[in-house]
Length: 605
Image 1: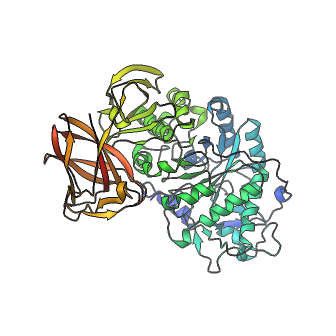
Image 2: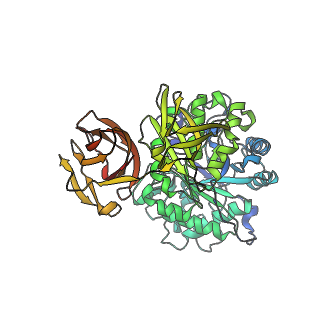
Image 3: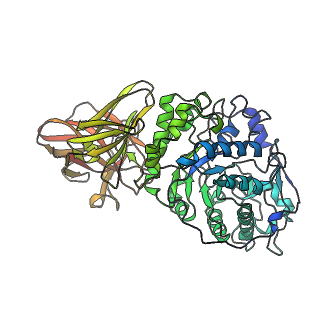
């Protein structure tokens, strides 16, 4: 598990020196009077936050990279006031008119270049005077002067360096000190155990969050990334349960009267999706996208993980809160560390998943291809428009199709070849629910491709993609449904019928492991051919299953996770059937676990 921003300890790319630096982290309290001690009342009612995914820039990708020249004064030294303002100017000049508006300052703004932290006399993070000589309010003012919004970063909990032997007073909370807001045993929390866990059963604790929220509001920040949040961030259990922290931040930011978008990081526990949706405007669903290497990212170092990890979260995204896939680093060519095909696929998935679109690239050196990816208005409209997030309509195999039905009756359809060699990928229109003709528009190339019959097939390079709007001109399909628990079916091995409140007819077939099999008998079709069979299933994690018909050879498919064992999802698998009665078998194989099966639906034509 790789960590998120703050301490940057990716297991797949960890450098020993960085590990020592992180483990040796110390903090110094700097008691200094601050202009923000005099607070102003709320100015006006806050507008609705996160009506659509936010767009902008984040400092972390360049901070974390070993790319030559980015961090000349040591790890993470890129983060300075001068560099933030340079990117602010570039964002305003190049991307603002396309909807990019946030300039987000990530971890380290209160740390010197040896990663020592500074705090004010109330235990709140204090900007490092070398990194940010003008202070955080002046930087926010400069960002606002460009018509943009300012974002800032904090970790969950009370940082150890802010504790001050428990005697540090809490702002605007008479009699309260840091000893009064943490557990007596000083248990640690967050993804790096860098902070003491806050005890919200104590009356002083919320006052500390209030003081932090008021400080960043008075500085003029519009966005807060709260990092290391659990359950998630590689940690679980009561010690790392920060739901109460997130709830306190939600309340505290609202109380400032300033609209502040609250974004949570990283690899949030999907079992607490309801909490993240209730208390925040966005949540990171995965590990860091950065490779912590000599580029910003790499395909294998978790860019490609998103195709597996995103589907389970899709149903949780919508106005007011979005699934955050992390930085979109597609604008700098060699510095990104990706091929052109990979850069387009990366941008395609982010757009169709309706992830926030914030790049970590150097905006002063965008190449022409990267600029074209970041400023394609038709693709941005997919991310920002009223259409729902896309989800896989085929299994998580190397060749995949993702789709969503738009309010106007069209479909957003993405084709992906995730294999390491070129391959053709086909979007069969029956997986969209209709048959016959459809007109197809290529969104990346702004080109109407004409009318296609029953399907659209494209030859794609390794890790390549295409993105289409498909407008149906054909006929809606009808299906024949077959329940997994039907007594006419055959169960083998460990397979058994179980109750399932989310399933059709309240039943499913589970325990498909170590040779467990489910065979649907009497599957009728009028004509021989290959049919896209809709498989409704439940699987808390991604699992594979062998699918075969009439005792023939099986094809193994990996079905995406549904997020938990109480949610049904569906994908389409191609099955070749004969005219008349058929059998369709789902077999776990001899060495694995397959999803639980709810039902299948077979097109009538």
